[in-house]
Length: 163
Image (cartoon, rainbow, N blue to C red):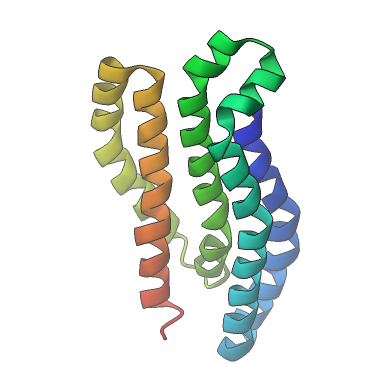
């Protein structure tokens, strides 16, 4: 859905501008400024993404009704849109934390997270889409991205940004 994917478009220029500076701070061994930049950038992304995501997820029926002009479509797709918006918001929020391991050259971090996710979520995706259709797929996508927020960021903090 266009509303959900629009959140990710906010990230690209920020990530592009931020990553070279994170890499420079890692190369200099300046963990104090790295940590400060990381936290300020995450806060900035939160301010940019979370209010829009909250409005879109909370009023997905109304947004879809205005967009499509069809109450039936809005009723059937609003839960899916809400789940996709929450999922996209979570995905957007983990991109800056993902940049830090990349700046350190820890590329296996993302690979390992994604391999574990694939192993766990493909069977769940098949099951839930067979049981619940598109809502089941959206639940899996939201679960994946919520897992990245709750688990992936914690792993990165534990390994790199201790304290």
